[in-house]
Length: 329
Image (cartoon, rainbow, N blue to C red):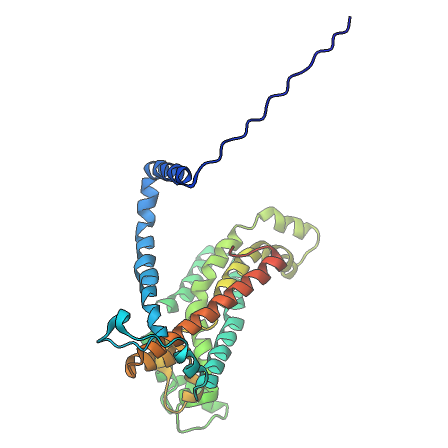
């Protein structure tokens, strides 16, 4: 006999929707459990969080003076609102074109050199087979990073001093002749700034690339070698594709700071003779804000600079995500 047996399907029960208050309570309870479980990790990151809150987020309150005619006597609240008056003044100003041009040229020049240079140096370090020699060469390349900006500029000035500086003496052997230091020549300022920065920071910047190269599986090199790949091809088809996510992430972060050239080194290298090429946004803000006490105007220029950097960062991240599927977010 055949009997028809109906199999009962488990009934689907729909979970009742939580209200916003219940959701908040659930999240807080979950956060408390995580805090109790991993309290040592949260204590470890507490100084970093406090640093960013104190020095990055709290100062945002003062950005409002960019839209006011700020007076220390009236304070933040009492100063009158003027809207985009200071931005219009900056854009229509005499030095706007020069400042933007110098900042962009110096930034792009620095990016073109500073992005591939540490990668190349890390690849060269990776080919050194003697461990002691490799460690010694890396230590030598790291050392300039610990030289302060003031000492660095003093070294540049001393090396380029006419008649006594050894770099000046070498240039004179090749036909250079001038009674003034090269640092005073506007056409040489970009090169001095960028290449001295490369010499100072390329070794330190190569650390993260060296660590990424160390993580490349050895069997990939062996497979490439068995296929007849030369050392150059192994680097091109194995090493670089493997560390490309690291290169892309660091490149995006560097591009996001395209207009953020630190004013310390530029300001110390500035002279009256090279001012046409050495005046950038950061030095312009410093002079307008601290030397001329134009607090609202300098804040607006700095805000303009940061907005442009943020926009460039978003665009660079979007392009990298579409091209390589690697991005910051």
